[in-house]
Image (cartoon, rainbow, N blue to C red):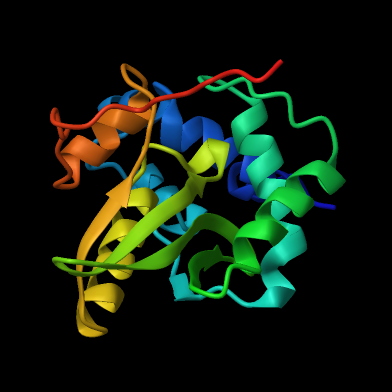
Length: 197
């Protein structure tokens, strides 16, 4: 393997792209290589590669379960999804709902973002309740979530939906993400939970 090939593989690897997209390296790169020929390597990194948006299918379940486990076992959630079977069972229950609808985004043939939810017939019209929305850890913060939300919103609007509803934790990046994407806090409602054991 040549040195050039080895360097190119390193700079196009998934791990490097994650560091580049989410870290300070992206900011430093622009500073040190402004208007220089070396900046052409950015095009080879394919940071803005084509995304494939589509509806969820049963064949996506295992890959979505693995992604779900990885995302929510990390910060800021630190949920204890200890096995793939556990996350697969959970997502499988969502998918088996007779009013289920779901969407996935693929990049380079891998699922990188998922939105799973269900339809509700409400007095104000057809609503979509988002049960789970997640983006691969290393791709968070680079616009894929917003593009996914736009795709979901447009798809649902074209099918007669008039509202999207979801629950998220306060004071974590997800809350800011949803506020940025046009959601608002409904202060007339609260989440009630009762522990049984």
